[in-house]
Figure 1: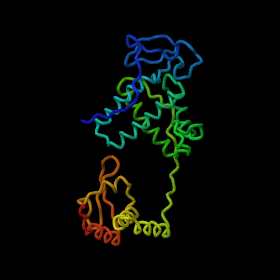
Figure 2: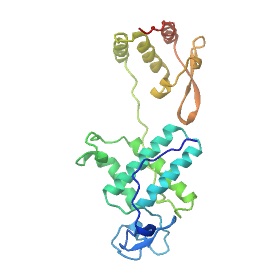
Figure 3: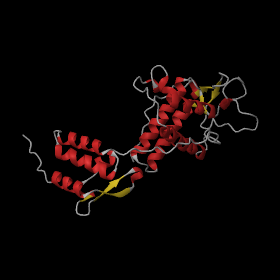
Figure 4: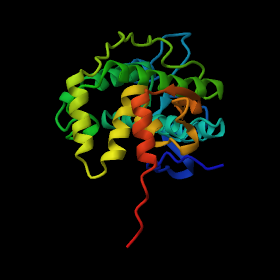
Length: 272
């Protein structure tokens, strides 16, 4: 099985594998299930200072980074798709960037609320979102929801593995996203796309791509993954591999079938 590396910078350990407690600044022995000490510094954020009889649902940022590597390996073991694992790796990396950028020693409910707020408004901060000058546009509401769902999977896994007693996302409701109204292409736009395809350096291929995408609505990644054996020109359908490694049939018009057939009959150019 291929291991999935998180590629985060490893945290430097203190002598005797001790870690600095984020709440009181004292050196405390570090264990797998260690949590921030809430007995000092009452002005620290609420995740380090829970109310009496309230279960601690915060994790040291350095511990979160370490456990996240194990989580992604577990995702790989459960044979989740490479695209899903990569998405989760990026989301976790961005969360850790935010925690370190804000100098949060631990990650709890308060820090996660701050993270989701930053996710929506970070593009307006100097330097752009995630410190990247080109990310100056607001994310779509569906992106915020995707972050929530993927991070919830991470923290639920930490609870199942006995690392946290409860998820810090438990008290944060899932964002409500209104269904986006997708506007279809106009006939004029379709004609413009086809005109550009027919004027390209590979007109038969590009025309087939435009018509196939227009008829089926498949994702670009699904189109790129098509093989000859996935196409049935006589029945005018194709088998595509979509999200979650699930296959489905999509259908295309007679005109698209003719263009595809014309492209596939095109003789391959010989080298030299």
